[in-house]
Image 1 (cartoon, one colour):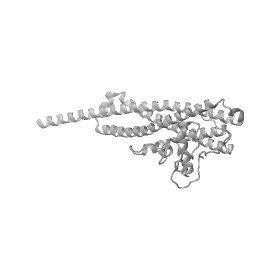
Image 2: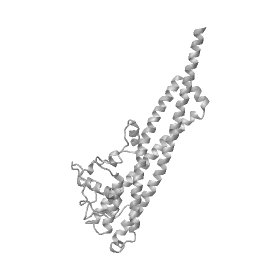
Image 3: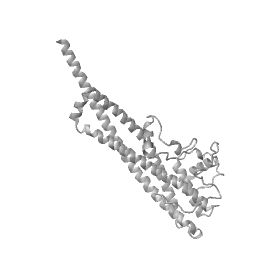
Image 4: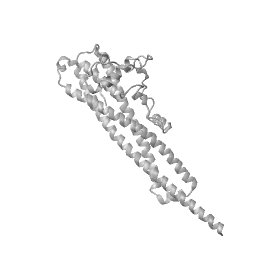
Length: 308
């Protein structure tokens, strides 16, 4: 995935948000236009300003870690939550009062740091590169966590779909078994559980699709800035930055490929859930039909005995 930059940096005109700021209880303050340096990518100005507001207010510590457990534990926690609960890690994406996605803020910080190095505006190259690496690691971590979660959800739902195919591929036997009231109840209860699993997976997937779109948009904008800057005068004035610059080009290429791959995998997971929902609906329909036939047959038998 992302290659890492090998020299650090900091800046003189504004500040990069360090990955771990010292905790100070305060409300985030949105910087004024005078407070915030101009970002080299105009569309990232708002995200950059919001990230500076967070670090300046000392509230960056409120951002939780994205990877808090392995993929299995994360999925178990997701499925244990109520159907109406929101997506996981919501506070990582946006803290109270914020409007810009965390991925966009991270890429805005990274691109500004590279800009500082190219323009010789950093007070300390070592500090800037250290901060850059922390933000790069966070983007990598998001991609890794999301890939793990989508892969595990796909495996889980594929296995459930295969299990349901067995009775559906032997409909005569299945309908005969459905005549047993206890078996029908077991099927209905199992389908309720599957509907909950699909609902929670959908909640998580919808958020992931939005994350992926934001990450890809931000990455493409950063890649465009790098492409425009590749032959700039900085190559002669700052040859020590060339290695970092090329590492960032490699990062953006790797991120764009990873986000695009995730889009395809998310789409496949969505299609899988559509199939699973359709199969559950068909099983519920068959169980209902058998239940009505069974009740009608029982009613006729009762009336016949009464008439006799």
